[in-house]
Length: 165
Image (cartoon, rainbow, N blue to C red; front, top):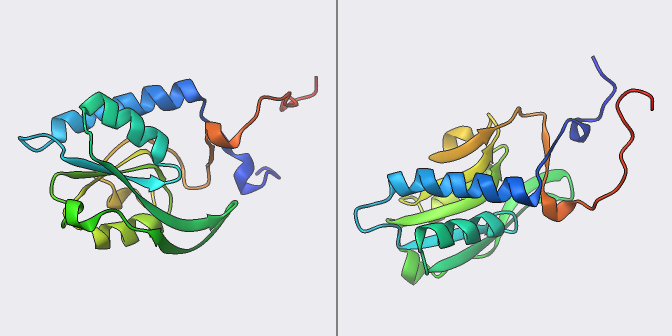
């Protein structure tokens, strides 16, 4: 057993890695698209915005909107609440719509979003076991106790090695 805190079991994602993984997700989603293609993307802010931009470019989807859901206060999860909804006249029930997020953790955010857009296809770049069943398509699964450090949360700096220098 280790004395590390849960967030210290980290999976560090660089901008390059996120771009590769989002493109891989787009490639998978291309095979899942309705006959006429995806008609819109809803990015879950904030984490879903970067992958949604990449996927929209790769799949040539021009209608991109956001849903703002707050479920974390720094690294502490709380009850998910919608702060901003997408254009529901455009989205309807979600037929032909992709919901994109960076990660599904416990699934609280996606439960809320799926109630709003029940027919949409949900895709995340990364998935943890507790929330995986709420996602139709994802690229990489990580353990529930892994904290993912996304590039927008990090700065370059020296890090001590695990064993003495």
